[in-house]
Image (cartoon, rainbow, N blue to C red; front, side):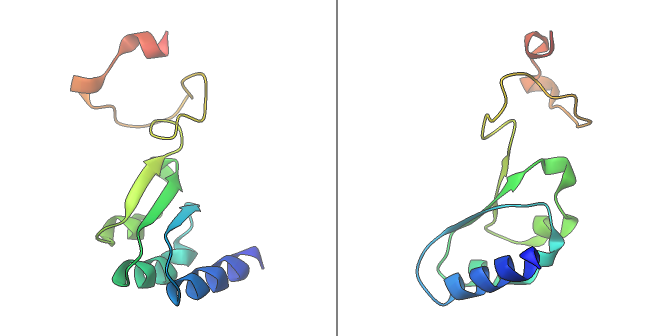
Length: 95
């Protein structure tokens, strides 16, 4: 039920001006996010990158913010399974 409410809200925003930041990993919102991106909207998804629905990767112009890395929502490094770019790897963050 909540998904339907969010979908309807995204559809209503698509008919207006404004930008969207959606906190979700859920592919149920792909059609609405795609519609927003085809319009004059800036759209961002916030979540854990490794849990995002793969369909979001196919949407040109979509901004993805990792809730830990980019948004800085946690004070300690979380025990996540992810690939870390060797050039940006700082072992101090994990100690």
